[in-house]
Each structure stands twice: as C-alpha cells, then as structure tokens.
Amino acid sequence: MPNDFVSETMLARPQLQPALHQPPRPAHVDLRQFRISRRESQEKFWGRFGVTQSSGSRFETGLAIPAPVAILLKLYVNGKLNDGDLQG
Image (tube, rainbow, N blue to C red; front, side, top):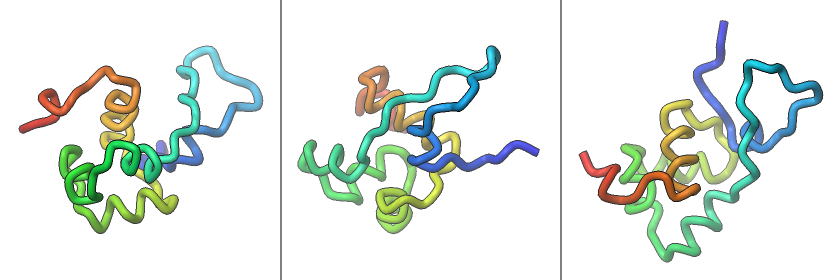
C-alpha cells in the first residue's frame, strides 16, 4: 500500500538503485530557512498551501508532509508556482 505522506528527509534521500518508473528526487530544501529568507511568518507562508501555522511548524521540524502539500511546495520552491497561482 503506498504511503500518502512524504517527509522532507524522504524527498532528499537519494535512492540506492533508482527504478526506471520513478522520477528523480529533489535536492534537500530546509523549509524553515527558505521561509525565513522570504521574511514570512509561519502563518503567512504555510497558509498559501492550505496548511495551519501549527502543522507548518511541525513540517519544518521534520514531520511527514502530505503528498499534495509536498508537490505544491516543490513547485513553489522551484519557481514553477507563484503566490497568484496558489490563491483559491
């Protein structure tokens, strides 16, 4: 059964023997430092992804991030999404 949650560590861990059907894993990003570099509060930063400040704080300390949020984060960090794209 597939796991619906992805931790920051899992995103950064290189595979020992990559399978042909799996995409490459992204480089490690320290979410807390990324947020701080943007000079944003946890409430503002995580709110754009539909995440509460409390959950965002836990994600920054290593709690597994649900796959949909992890995908949005990856796209946002890589510049593929901007604030306008994330406003519901």
